[in-house]
Length: 76
Image (cartoon, rainbow, N blue to C red; front, side):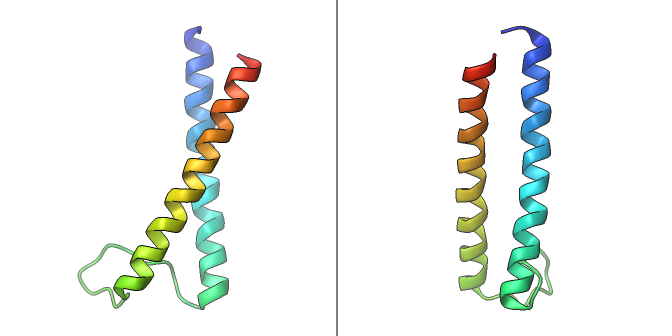
């Protein structure tokens, strides 16, 4: 694979990750009425919320990464 294709794929992955983060944050806020759990000392998030957010972002990120890898194999 040529270096330009590798850079393009890395850029696509970063862009998709940013869009997924924004989309999931908006969906979380709409569904719960609260901001997504954040790492901070004064956070009042429950362990359940933190685990749910972690699993949700991980699964969606993995599915997106898998999809990008499949598209990569098809076009490059």
